[in-house]
Image (cartoon, rainbow over all chains, first blue to last red; front, side, top):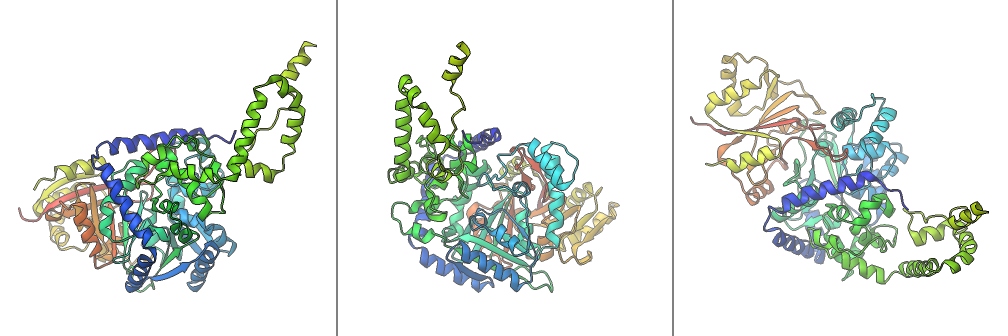
Length: 435
Length: 176
């Protein structure tokens, strides 16, 4: 069995309960989902037109727009911007898109110091891990583990109260804003009409990241475009409600102008990332995965995610949506078997992506899934026949324990380990005990 | 005007809200907070309220323009008083803009933030608020819904770890 994080189950259930409580009070919920889907479908169907409009509008208010074909190009262009402004310290607000392009390690390899300023991301960064959830990166760690981490890495007294832990983290983060030359954030929505970028958050660190350092660079996947701010009337009701059960996050930040900080030169860069999105937009059946708002509700509701956590998927984007994005945005991983086909994700998705049927479609095309299914059926057939099993057991053990790692992770996924045979079967141990 | 919904939503978001009529009440409301040093936005209402604050014996207050320059904008302000562009009752949100750039920047991390919202702008629908935001000439707008919060550790809610720890909203009508 994969590593199981008990904290994941508790946290996902809490998020789901909060969501449910709020959504119950919204009789228009279904209509909003429909409207939101229509908005996103319109943009994805005319992506080039909207990209051009957004680019023009952002340039018109003084922002510089950079287009990146893939992750490697995005990393190179962002490093160029950092070089142009002699940046050596970067503060970052939480962004899955920066995870997608592996930005932190690229910046660090170039000698820059990078501080994640969202508390959860900061914890994950200290632990040397990847975020385990789209909106709650440290979901898989409990207070004891975080207390150990802070004590060891920050040299603060060990204590386990979440409020005090948060303050210990914030005190360290606070000092990092003032001496950073560049702040990097993601983007939740980009309204093409006036080139307004919208970034939502709860801690306030994003606002500081965007406003305190002289250079602000925002990275967004090209699917984050919406026609105009008016479209947020439904999208803003759907996103925080689905993510955390909030009517609105504590901060919604809007940017369509350069900040004015006296004499200090200010610069804004918007990096538009393709990295497989155009290919996905051109795929008539799969393109709806681009409607995703990254709320994380399909992770929270998923029985597989609840059991295994985000790292089970071995990809940047976990959960049901991660299964759909992996063939396009990642390394082409086939995760179609990480699904129990319960269908809950399709019902909870705020933009009505038919996740369950999309996963079934991927599964029907998956050679790996066919191979795995064959293997599972054969194993079941053997195990159901004790005499057959006993005669084959030494051979099966030999095969299992000498299975090349590459084949094992192909079949079983990189985030999981196929269980190994015990050195001696239970049956054999009992036989020996009798003698 | 009826601000019942706004007051309910503010309370839901762990902010405090109340109605204030006239300068005298405004001075009183601010004086209640004056156990901490106050920093006031250079806004006509607050300039008018300053002599009354002094008359109530409140001496530890400054206007933003009197603060020492702070390029980084990370000055730790105890209690910041600013004027909002509007409020959205549906969500309990306050709209703040960079029309006063320094007030906008420093509102990132005060310990307490007191926001005065003009009564006639305190009943915006979400659609009206988006329209106002789209037209904002300074180009920078934040909607604040309750104080800064995190639930990153075991989904336990913690207020004010990074931004304002408390948010108090004064729905203000100038004439008494």
